[in-house]
Image (cartoon, rainbow, N blue to C red; front, side, top):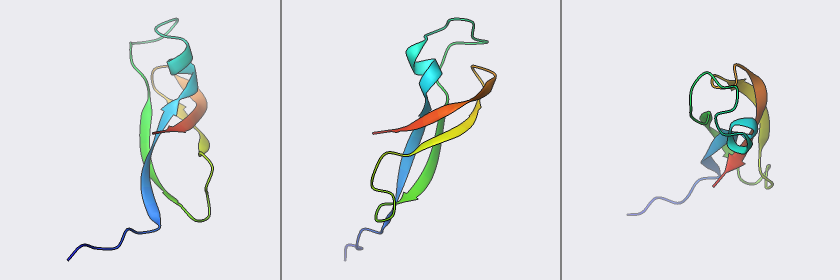
Length: 66
């Protein structure tokens, strides 16, 4: 039988600066991505968290993508 979909879903967070400025003053080419979970009922809007980006070599805002 199929299991009921849970409240928690897996999301992907992507660096805003790497996405908007491709390969300008970067250590290497690429976009920083993190995966995490969020509660669908409590957090309905897109998540935005400050995390470390290894390509920018600093803490930047990471935004939820599809």
